[in-house]
Each structure stands twice: as C-alpha cells, then as structure tokens.
Image (cartoon, rainbow, N blue to C red):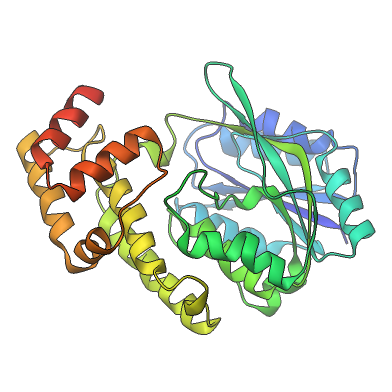
Length: 338
C-alpha cells in the first residue's frame, strides 16, 4: 500500500496535464499513488490520463461519464485512495520535486498527523511571490485553532487573508475517515473542509519552504461570473453554521457571521459586475443595492466597518457603507469595461 495518495481532479486540462503528472512522477519520494479523476472531460485529457497510467503503474485513472464538479471528483479520490496520507494537487499546478519527501520527513521527525508548507504564487506576467502558511514549527490543538480554524472562521477581511488552500497540506487519511469528511460544492468548499479537518487534527508541523507552485489563472472559475453565487454562498454559510455548532466555535469569533457575510458581500458585488453577466448596468446596480439591504448583509454593514482591506476592496466597502451605489457602479464599469 502506498504511503501517500495524491488526488488530482481533471477537467478540460490537456494543456497542463502532462506537466502536472510529471511533477509527481519525478518526485524524490517514490512511495506514492496518483489518482487522476477524469471529471467528464470532452477534450484530450482522458486519453492523456490513460497514457500516463500505462507508463507508470502507480497511476490510477477514474473516468466519470458526466462532469460533476471538483468536489465530487475529490470525493471519488478520497473513496479510492489507499494511502495513509492524502495530498491534493490541482491539474494546472505543480509540486516542487522534493515536495513529498520534505513533507514526509517533516511528519516523521515531528510526530505530527498533518504537515503543511508555504507555496509559490506564479502570475502570468512571470512575477513570483512566496505565500507562507504559518511560521515554521509544530502546533498543538490550541495552536491549530488559533492559526487556522479562527482565521477561516471569522478573519476574512483584514489583509493578508488566510487562504483555504487544501493543496498546502499532507493530510492524515485516518483523521479524514474518522470524521467522515467530504467536499461539497464548487466554491469555498476547501475552506469548510480545512475548518473541519483541523477541528479534528491533533498536531501540525509546518515548513516555510515553498513546495507547491500555484499558477494564478485569470480564466479560472473564481474569475468568472457565477449566476448562482448567492445560492452557493448561502449554502456555504449554512454549512459553516453547522460546523460552529458541532465544534463549539462560537466563542472563538463572536462576530464570525458578520465578518463572513461582509467577505461574501464583497465577492458578490464583484461577481455582479463580472464579465459574462447578461444584466444591464442599471440592473446590476439595482441587484447590488438589493443585496446590501438583505437582513444578513445589512447587519454586517451596520456592525462592522472593514479596515485593512486591499485598496480596491476598501474603496468598495466604503462606497457600500455610504450607499453610493451609482459611484460604485461607475467604478466597476470603468474597471471591467462594461
């Protein structure tokens, strides 16, 4: 049985797939299996997956007849994984070639059930920036709650925001299975998975070495208009509420709802003005004003004055609090060339 199962959801990824797989097959650590989950691809990805599996018997391929989304693909990988530890890799990203060895050795040396690393952000322009996870060290349950659970719960506004990237970790399969953890949805699903996982993990070891290459893709789902964003976000808050109750997290961040709603509101506003929305500019302005009047959002706006945001988001927040929706609309109109 392999020590590590690496799970890669694959969808319309023929341009990236071979390099992604190569970043695993060339690892200095060899005791792994690679699970490629073809999520109903209609391009050349399925054939590339099969070719990779034919060349290395540590690679297994699962073909889904219809596209079910990244969460279902990851869940299939979790059900099929044979390894004692689980790693996730996005198909348009790469591991550094010593990534698995470094994480594995850190886990053995520290006795931790989970390990994590920094990562390298790579922009289309060629710019590079290291994004840390936490300062290097070993964290107990109290440290995990302070360093990961609390930021994911209710620190979603002040920069730098703690990102819920699941591919920065080597997870314990035992913890995942004991807590019956799965993914749900196509947006923010990683934040909830991390929150619940780290409510169950006992010990986390962290290295500041950037072992993962994250390619910032302007064409990714997070940059496209989501017609059902409000429904998706509503379900996210509903599930988050259930986790708060299950693990008694309310006292950690009493205003987590308002903080979360403000963060969701800023995303929702950007989404309304995103390319791909068929509404007229006036309809978009009206939709944003109505969204801000919703009781949950109105409560967040009244009780929290965001500070420390990125300059653009701070401007949006200030305009929202002042109810300057016309100016807000004109700003986005210029920015997105609507």
